[in-house]
Amino acid sequence: MFDRLVDGICAALWNLHPGEAVYLGKHEYDGVVPDLTGAHVEAELDRLRGLRDRLDGMDGLDAEQVIDRSQLVAAVDSTLIAWEQIRGWRVNPMTPIPLLDITLYLTRGYAPFGHRAEQAAAVLEQAPRVLDQARACLEPVVPTVFAEWAIRLATGMAESLIHDLPGEAGGDPVAAGALTDAGAAAAAALRDYAAWIETDLLPASSDAFAVGGEVLEDMLRRGELIDLDLDALLAMGEADLEANLDALHAAAAEVDSSLSPAEAYRAHVASVHPAGGDLIEAAGGMLEDIRRFLVEHHIITIPSEVRAVVAETPRHLRWAFAMMNTPGPYETGATEAFYYVTPVEPDWPPEKAEEWRNALNLYALEDISIHETYPGHYVHFLHYDAAPTEVSRRVASYAFTEGWAHYAEQMMWEEGYRNGDPRFHMAQLAEALVRNCRFVAAISMHAHGMSLDEATRLFMDHALCDETPARAEAERGAFDPGYYSYTLGKLQILRLREDCRRAESGFDLRAFHDRLLSRGAPPVELMRKVMLSS
Image (tube, rainbow, N blue to C red; front, side, top):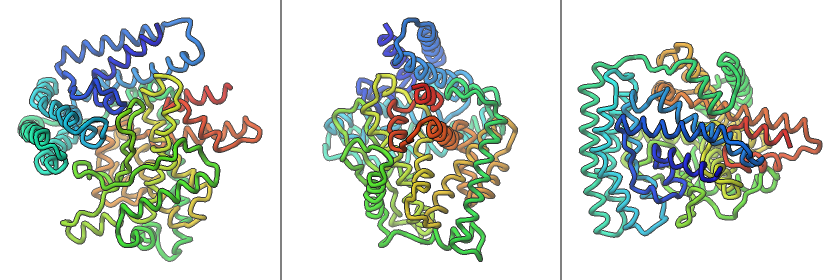
């Protein structure tokens, strides 16, 4: 009975987010784009609420099932909050655009290219339908920042489908032709959607975007099982921000005491580029160094000798410096994991190329590699294979997933990686300060009235950000209130580690990390109960 209910709830979740099922390796969802009509969405949410109530009231569960129930209820509640309280499908015109993303079909070789191209084309062919449904569902007044980003995203995806897709469509000419045709039709629909937003939605848009303190508290209490008020959480985040600023000043003084931290970072960190300028080759060498450090210092078990493959980021994903592309726990046809690093484009003007190299400098690239691969997301993915239950393989907490990878950056410095080099420490702290500001901005913007301009200044003043990336960070917080999760998860894991250290004689760091990752990515507070009660 319990297992059937788990399957029913997961199916209801995947009906709303079929791309999550495809990522996990559930390829019966290939080519599926959800129905965004109001009646259909409301029916799906009603179904999900009913299944959740049945799960919550179920008796006679064993110890494993009790843990699973808590994790699954948190996942369902997060979804219900997103659809019913944050209501992106009603107020955010960006919502339908990711539903048309075909990245997994292009990058994961789980089936012959012809089959994957057919499924990708099936997704793209539904662009007119899903974008028309979004038009019908969206309220007449939406936040300005959402409308502006939706125009950029829709236009950017259209450009990628026209210019990049033909080059990524593989060697099967028939499949490539069908995929290219579907891409062209989807691009036309996306351009029409962007034009509609610009002419109909944007002029009537509003500066109001905050979800409100009650919604944030619901996200934390129901989705992450955290029973602290926002003021207490904000104080924790601000304290970590101040601690990291103090550490940055100390590291900068070690590097060059005649300069301010920002000046020292530009002169001695940002200016240091990988030898030869080849970011892909440099990242490959770093991964072996980082992996070797983990093994030699007994920091965490690495469950596989298979290495992540370092590769250039596919052209349609080059909005990010670097990212992991790992197969889901149910994937059987393609088990390679790719660590994508975005190179300098050959046609960039010199000033843009230099800006990219400075942002992805030698030390920043190493810290990002720790976050994405060892012992961050890639090692976390490897531990998923041993997760004990269907629930622990299927649903994940935002704060655990990103908190673990962010914790890994700080933990590696604490354990002596790079032998105390203050330049590497400055790079690690620069990343931490961005996440600190996300935490403060999320709570302050959505619960305390902080404006986008004030949030932009927060990132400029406290995270070594120039105005353009600072504004982008602030705007992301407007439509991703949960981006507090990086710092939140890190702080939760640090606290759990210290509590386990006090509770256990002969505390062992590797054993702690292995245990922490043993159940996938449940809310950290749930893992706290598991680890401190045994």
